[in-house]
Length: 393
Picture 1 (tube, helix red, strand yellow):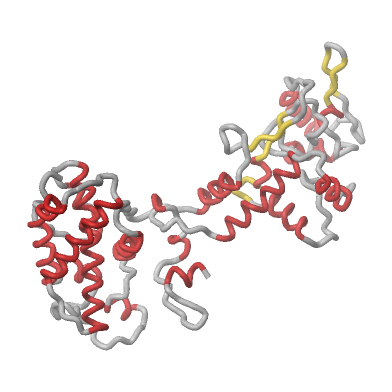
Picture 2 (cartoon, helix red, strand yellow; picture 1 turned 60 degrees about the horizontal axis):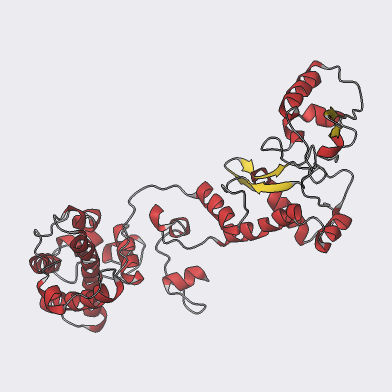
């Protein structure tokens, strides 16, 4: 549904999707539109139940889950019975099996020991960033009570700290002894206190869990930033920004682009100058009509003549202007607006037989840019006479 809205489709009509969804779903700073992937949103929302299970100790819903899913052979940080299908099974499996950066989602949750009665010694991440059963598998196999808590294994007796173990067999095997030595080195400094145990979310500086933080974590795993990243102009409408975003990627329906996608349109020559095949590069930089428009805009803005060998160069011209930041910001939006206006004029010619008039396009750019810049930018209060002559910018 989101794709259909973006590309103008509906249940009755199917429209071409010009950009792959992975690119669309990237942040704007990574070259996308910042739209969400529903799978990432769903994972983030469901993961909150894993956090709630650990932090809401005495809630009724948690006690019901424990009553239904507690099993003597289930050795995960969140209990679930494979024989019971339903929502909780899906939540638990997602929390345990979803990997980010090669680590399960559960590993980003870590117990901070207080009394030690709410943290599982072997099944929960607490002293290291993974459950001890994974770090010391042979010791875990030797453990008689696999669901023991930290308080069951570490006890305060007066001023002394005592470690209590319950092994099935004596620790004789060298591998087991080695694991025990490593385990003891990891936990020997742990001190139980009188405060309650707490859980922290590792990616957050303050240890607080949020759905937004999980989404950010999932997004960082999937994004691969490459290619050109456009600087969005804040004072022109989103539709103009999106048009230029597509334009730089050759993802607008020019004659050449439609021909590549096997859309039969007849002649794909440029409808403005009839001198070359209509591509994005030609239409906005090489076409004679576009060249005259850019000359008019350069003269109006009192900047060097605009020449570009690529759309990327065209979108970066404002950075090279020796002028104030306000003029650079204005020039950026004006260049994008010219691209928008050329495309509109091209479509009006093809679909409404409205002839191209260069002076009308330039006048339209001046009027619309003044309206938007004076109302949408941080530099408000610009006078029309100053804008029209483009002085004091």
